[in-house]
Length: 143
Image (cartoon, rainbow, N blue to C red; front, side, top):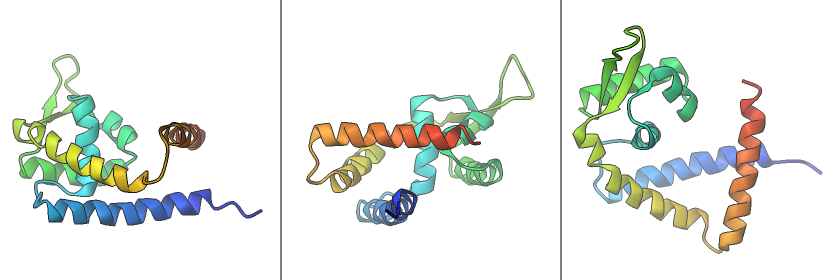
């Protein structure tokens, strides 16, 4: 049996990303794009984290993340701050305008979640996400 899990996950990410961008456009949300949404999502859950942790949580390479943070800082979504205890560590914080975007983001993610899980029971969703967490743990231990 040919296993297609990786291929299917990649396709879902590609198509889902296009749908996410389309929903943002339909709702006239132009303060952030889908890729920036991943960064905002992590910071909405834990604000003021080091860039290295943000890179790990988003799965973005440091070089990619640094460029995105530059653009997000210019757009007024995030700010960089050196911590009081370790001046070498740069922490990333949301601005008030980024915090105010959370409801818009939640609305878009609910809509795309409804698309993803159409026809699934709550138990199927719980099981599926448990499998995805296991796969993620398997690949993360190889990093």
